[in-house]
Length: 427
Image (tube, rainbow, N blue to C red):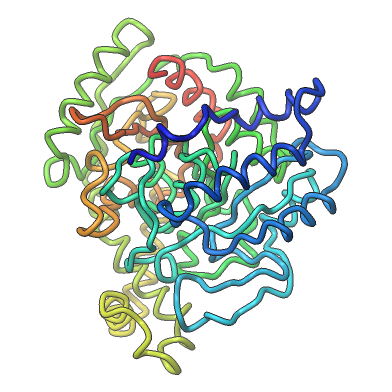
């Protein structure tokens, strides 16, 4: 069963806030409705790593009475600490771990009036071994990883907003596969304190939502940056660059080829478009990303490696072994290349405001094949770029295909504005 078709049309986060303000809905009634829906579909969806209805009601009762997100529930990926809740990180190694305090991304959301509904499923330490979660928009296919549960809960209408993390493609790709919005802000825009580290050069807190403005709402609430108005304006970029990305030739599926042509046709006449091909050094950098990620992961998971190696999946063990064998001078050289390209990226865009580029190689692959490839995400994560995956395209069988908006690090407002514009075109 397509779980989405069994779900009432969920309100966006902003629609929910308006209903609260109008007196048409109370936060408690909203939560109870979400819990009722969860009880019906969670046995098939398997998106929550931890959800206690009584605990969720107590969390709501303790929520701050004011703030941009007052009364809104959020889901939190289970690599991000929530005080008093499990922090298993998708691994039996931490099966009994309970977080002592909130991660910064959670504490700041609470200060803005939000509350935590529950913890969402993640792949093993936000890497490869899949979570049990199903894709509510494409039965029998992966919801993507590593933020599998966060994407699925939002897509199924179980929560309006959910936090994820991205080290390669773990926000943008699941959003594309599940047909929702995923926003990976500029690197370090949201404080990652209290989040299980995987690769410190890349780890970024991101947000899943049903609308671009909803994603902007969360990030404005926790950073104070005026991003919501930018997303709501939804003005077209002066010039947008169509960038297939260095991964196109090796990874683009026939479904992506067709969706790309569909996108180009829909955009014709809507703004000035230019085809953009980045210099070859960017392709080299994208290929270096998994090597530095492995190196830094071997350091971040050193304790798990030493004490619990046998409880790590074979694929993660192989990655950590590769990272342990890498010489530090190579890591230093890759970091220097990253710093250089982050400084050059705006210039190398050649005057375009934002790039439009694939969010994933195609629609979600079969669930037994894994969580899909981050090949269309690694470069932008490495650059620290703000990225927003916008839904609205699909393959021949209806499986969602997202496109992402990308800009230089720090250009979050411009990227969200363009994403809001693209959302109106693809809606």
